[in-house]
Length: 160
Ligand code: SME
Image 1: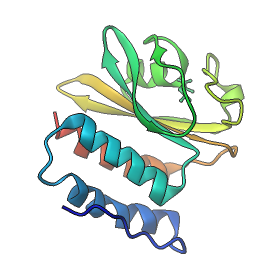
Image 2 (image 1 turned 90 degrees about the vertical axis):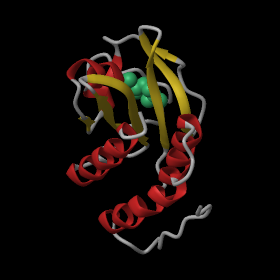
Image 3 (image 1 turned 30 degrees about the horizontal axis):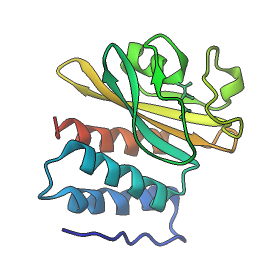
Image 4 (image 1 turned 180 degrees about the vertical axis):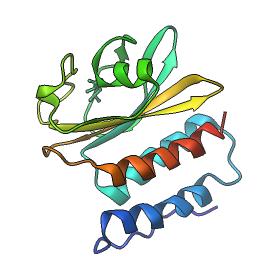
């Protein structure tokens, strides 16, 4: 099991994602505990990509409940119909928000958060969890983030 990450800070965003994916696969190899693996995945994303806030909300008890994350304290429970996370849950697809203030119903866990991407983990037609990434810069996420984070969430779906 690999317990460290090697990501060259000089790489482009896409190169960082490409380098990160196999390292995350190595990190979780041999471990079957979902929370342990998601915790390391989230930490790896924070470390490699330098995200302002990154974490998951589980579909649990009829709402979205905070799971492993890296960043400042966050709201613990989000109703299915609320916020960007709720939109991701109900639409069962990635939601890219270039400016959180322009997104109706956005839930501000931190006033420093300016843009956001939320990606679902889908298994058998159900959203198991959503990955939420926040940035303190406007318009900080694009199709590259979407492509690689969706690929990562397919890996997470395989853990269920
Ligand atoms: N902004 C999210 C809430 C979660 S925090 O950003 C960590 C939303 O609108 O669903």
